[in-house]
Image (cartoon, rainbow, N blue to C red; front, side, top):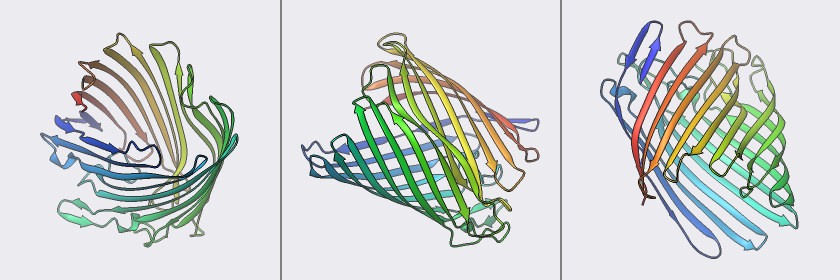
Length: 350
């Protein structure tokens, strides 16, 4: 990987390991599942860029009747902040991020109508930064998200559904931001209407939606964020061996940037996959995101192009190679950079 800042390019090599396991029940009624995964990297020149991340998750489903069930999940995740994250810095250490998620949902089917009512609590905590031996606290970035939502869905046929998704959230910050002494506690609402094509269609699968979102901050000097929402996760099978996947997402992200309440973030990605044979699969893709720091003069954009190939030695062993080029643009002084990343590895599944 080579990263360019101004006119200085730095490169490094790393060993990356992504262990994962899944234990799932095979009961005729109800369900229980445990998942665990890790992200470990070992850089040769810059060990401060090493990842020591893991995720542990438990999921369950209680079947009340043939048409109703309750789902619950809990997840604990620890990771290191990406250098491309909204409030990330290019210097010093990367802070640890600890996230705990609790989710509860009830599903009820009424003939062709299915209604889901769900609630989420997500608690996010940031570790300290260290710059030249000096400790800098990130306690002002800690927050807890509370969300309630309802999602009615109408089935026209097994491959076509009309749905809406209405949600309300509150993001609680116990500490005012160190940058401007303003508290980022906010309340938001999201309204989406979309179509789903199910997961079994011969040519088209996935869903897309359009909507409106708003996030309002308790501090009067922080501007509210209003946005049109566009979300998608669609897969189009052109032929039996070629498919194209398109994804899009819009939401309001968190920041403690001076005088900015939040960041309106839009992401788009497209990837084509082709089976050259029963063992050889190639992929080609591109992605783009835009970040608007509402209330400030800072904007960020990132474009990425990638190509990959996979060779199946067997169902249990897969060789893969991937190349990725990234360009990052920002209105911040000397913040632009480009990066090249090449990966070569093997996936083992048992």
